[in-house]
Every structure is written in structure tokens, then in C-alpha cells.
Length: 357
Ligand SMILES: Cc1cc2nc3c(=O)[nH]c(=O)nc-3n(C[C@H](O)[C@H](O)[C@H](O)COP(=O)(O)O)c2cc1C
Figure 1: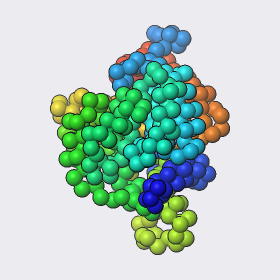
Figure 2: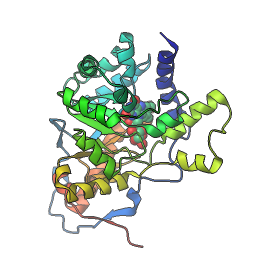
Figure 3: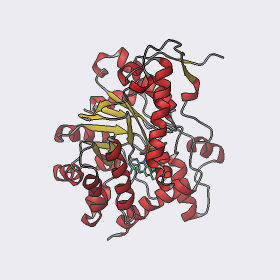
Figure 4: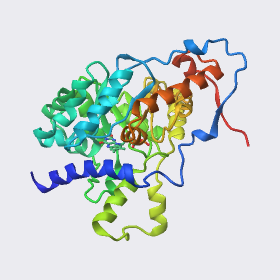
């Protein structure tokens, strides 16, 4: 294996360890959900026990409006993590996204750490994943088909991570021609393409450009959860033991760079409302989702479903993955009861407003 390929494998392992062991969450910015509130409905006219959390996504009827977000694959222990995520996602009938499959393209011996998900989750939607820099470089049709075939994927996520690449010691910051190459990709592939950030959010202008390139679903992955600038800064400091890449005041701003998740949702909802050609865009809310109230608010602000990565990793690590997801769904059910929404379609139409004062 050449040096750059070894770096990719080590990086995936150190990402998991850094996210579990270091303080890598945004510290001067939040998701923005705390600024919103629902209006209480004192006569909800529904039975709490009959609230239906199921919804349609990626051509499947899923039991909850929630997905385990892209995380890992491509190194030894990743197989075990992906297997555990797949078993829980299959049991709960929710979609699962896997981590970047770059290693699967580079080295056949790592494919099993990805394909294990389909083995243990035969019936749920599973999404493949590749980075914008790889798309910008240009993927062959054979490589695109391989990404889909390894996990019999229901869609391909392209992750946009300019801030992460900027901070990554070995990052690839060449995003030139990305949108043109993305358009070629969406034309070449049979499966739907989902564009996603990794924690800095997607603006309405970027969402429009992505939709123009043929993307059907946008996962905003906004600011307020894990800051990938912080994760990569930790790795940078470990390797180089000095921190003079940026002016200290600018570094602080860059570590907290990004559009809060709630703002991404309201901006894209306004785009869809104003410009009919973007009405079809489906939105996934992620980036700092931390309970079922966040999920309820995100759906009322325009999301189809929500997704979470960092908190799912921690929950799995503490052997409470299924319990955490079910607790969040119970939170969601409580909020739906108190707003009188008996299903996800009604929650999408439920009034939510900025808190006063
Ligand atoms: C350990 C770990 C590895 C990740 N690797 C990927 C990846 O390979 N591809 C990707 O699109 N996102 C990746 N992410 C980013 C998440 O999918 C997500 O967008 C981001 O962490 C923000 O969501 P959160 O606040 O719920 O964690 C990773 C996240 C974690 C925690």
C-alpha cells in the first residue's frame, strides 16, 4: 500500500477515536433549534398511542423519520462498527448511511468493512458515500457502479467538506470543477444522489446549485454538532505540535465556521417556496441533532427526516444505541401529541415560531 493510502486508513480510525475522546463540538455556535417553539394545543383530538412516526424515504416505508448518518468503513475495526449500526438500523427499520468509500475504491481488501452492512441489514435503505474531492477529480462509471454494488445501495451521498479538507493535515482542497463533475455523476448513475455537508451546513444558494447539478436530496449537516475543523485540528496538533497555521482570533472563528442547522432548513424552505423549480428538493436535517424535540422542530422547519452521527457513535460505544434512538422517538411522539400532529405529514404542516423576547 502506498503512503497516501495508509494515511486514509489511519485517518478513518483516528476520526472515530477523536470523536469519542476529545471535545470536538462547536463551542460558540449552536444548531439554532433552541430559538424555536411550538404552540401548545390543549385540544389535540388525537390518541397518543396511535401517533404514526412512519414515513417514506429513498423509496421505502421506514418506521421513524430518522437515519444513522455517514461515519465509517475502510479499516479493521470499522467492520464491527458498521455491523452494529446495520443490525440496529435493520431492527428499527430506519435508513443507514456509511462512511466515505474511498478506501473501497483504492483497496479491495477493505470492501468487506462496508459490505457487512448489507449482510446484516438486507431490507432497509442504505446509502453509499464518497467525497467531493473524489468527484471533482472525476470518477469512472466503473468506480461509480462499484460504490453502489458493494452495498447494493439505494442512493449515493456525496459529502461536501471544504472546511474539513482545509484543516486536515493531508487534506485535498481542490474543489475546482466540482459542480460540473457532479452533474456528470448524476447523469451517469441510476440511483439518487444526495449531497451532504459534514457540519458546516448548506446555504440556499448552494442548495440551488446542487439541485441544478441533478441532486435530489440535500442533507444540510449544519453547524451545532461536531466541528470537523476541530477534529482535524486535533490531528494536526498531534502531528505537528504547533498551532501557528492561522491567527489565533481567526482560528477561533474558523473552528466554529458554518451555518447553524436550523438556519439551513429555513433558508432552503424559503428557496423552495420562492422558486418552484426547487420545490422537489427533499431535505434531511442533521448537524447537532440531539433529541426528539430537535427532530420535531427540524421536520416542522422543512425536513423530511433527521440524521445523527456523533451522538450515535457515542451511544453505540456506551451500548445504548437502540435505547437512545427509541428515547428520541418517544420525545418526538410527546411533541406531536402536544401539537396535535398524528403523523409526519401533519408535523410538517405544524406551526413553529421563533421564541419571543
Ligand atoms: C467518526 C465519524 C466519521 C465520519 N465520517 C464521515 C464520512 O466518511 N462521510 C461523511 O459524509 N460524513 C462523515 N461524518 C460526518 C457525519 O456524517 C455528520 O455529517 C457530522 O458529524 C455532523 O453531524 P453530527 O453533529 O450529528 O455528528 C463522520 C462523523 C463521525 C462522527
